[in-house]
Length: 91
Image (cartoon, rainbow, N blue to C red):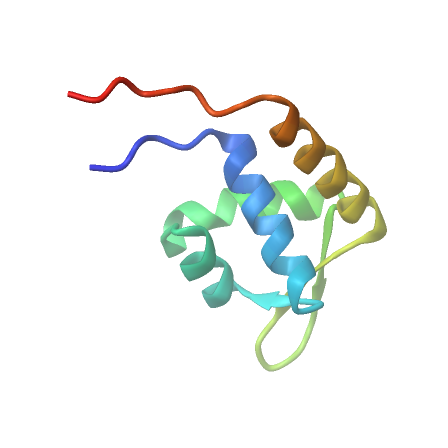
């Protein structure tokens, strides 16, 4: 069984996915971030409400990281690099 991820780790993955290919569909985000279609909705609402990601309308809506989102992504990556992952004791 995998360990629980924190909200910031999931948001980081979503921003990365939406920035990598210029945009990502909900399906790409679900599979790329290891979420399901029900749990991804609040995260997508959060990043769009805060203007970190914008929705590109079309036959299949796509999510694109904004300039503000790219700046936040840079800060989140820096923070992740500054704080090492906790060591889990092995059995």
